[in-house]
Length: 406
Ligand code: FNR
Image (cartoon, rainbow, N blue to C red; front, side):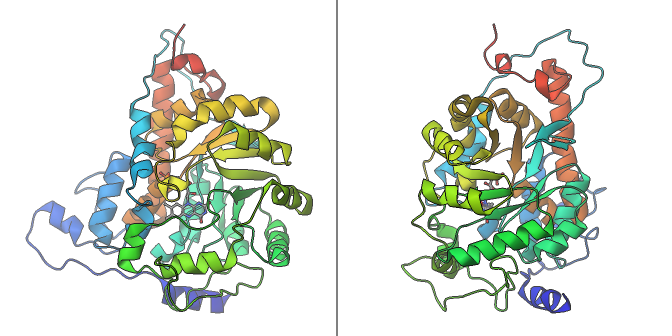
């Protein structure tokens, strides 16, 4: 374990301060440093952050330069990236009134697991590079705030340590490798660690072309320890980028099998005891394939706009998928959720829960563990308010008629 920590510390992204520019509070903020201890990165008294968008811009002030490009970026023209969020603002809510909303309850169940709120944390590769303690602070904060967390295969903290630090359920995001026995060994390890479900990513047979990463020649830091990539943590790293992509994309392509078919999903559900959610589905026919192959559900997602550009906004794809799945499986959605009302819209369109990705990155950059918890509490409070204002006392009362009234 000490060895893991040592390697991880070496691999952390370093940022530099902007130096001593002149006085106003915005510059005080700009001088904050990502490598300062959490709590010292900014002073809430200077400028309280009241929504996720403000965490986003504060994170950019703190991290500066290209540090956040890997996290914030999307593929090609970033049309899907922008559409994910923009599509929510095109959806109108028709509130019900006089519904006695003095008491509200955001509790629900996902895959039969009770959870205090329908806001989960999406798998975000390498988020642990943004904190000296790897993925632990983000996971701990998220589970304390009531989120089910899914750990990315590409994380820097061993899954066993993440589960031990969490205050709630941890799921694991999986890629199926060319070497199936390596995949099977990893799955056994994930099961033994106590994970509650697998999210099998379907929309990344090879990595999308993220032009910010190509421009920045984004590569895995030297000495990176990716302890959940394989059962023994070994990381086969190519020396350089192939085919004009980034070295990170080349590493991905070496390992992950681009030849998967639905038969492989049936293989996965046969070798694992855990429920499998197929992540990255935007079509009803694919959702049916997933359920028929033994998946417990699907995650409607376009990988946060990082894979196929001009794929539909996730929220626009949700309704048809949810209708096709019906009560045969779980439907979760992610992509562009930045407001509690977005969560409500997703539930009204048939999702049982949502996941958020980049907001967790921004919370972590701004204020470490505290920042992640704050972002999730903001979203939960906004959801609670949106429920009150649409006449919903419980998650069950968030129904489709809020979008097109009778
Ligand atoms: C991701 N996402 C992702 N998905 C996945 O299945 N495996 C992974 O390793 C990653 N890694 C990753 C890294 C970064 C930096 C981002 C931003 C995203 C996609 C993620 O799980 C989720 O689908 C999106 O992040 C949701 O969109 P928002 O909330 O970021 O808009």
